[in-house]
Length: 143
Image (cartoon, rainbow, N blue to C red; front, side):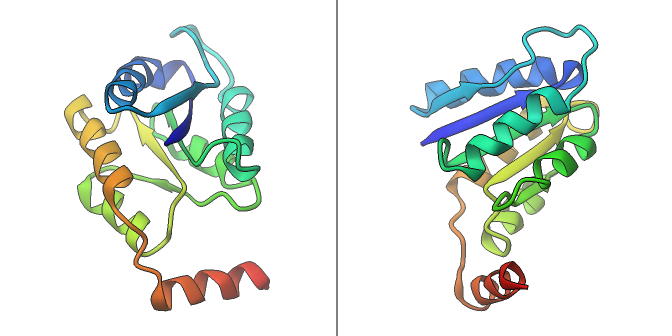
């Protein structure tokens, strides 16, 4: 799978670990930055990653920050992006099963690295249930 990834300075350390994890799992990773832990404005990096998912350049995307909130909000401004803020295995599973999330946002200050890696794994492995959830998403998209 081709996965976009981006972070601000507060999510940089986890981004590096997640990139390594994804590559070891056989995924292709497109890193949109940032490339250090120096203070930066997250939209500069998050928007291009979200656009890559929205336009089909990447199948999925992961964005990171201190809390993950601003990154999720920024990613969700792109049409056809469904970015879920995840903080545990349940949120990772449900955002795929029920919401068909094609992006996730993680907060480096909110979870441990093992939990963050588990979130990524679960989100990648969990299929979308479809059915009534798919119909509801399609109806909302048409409004």
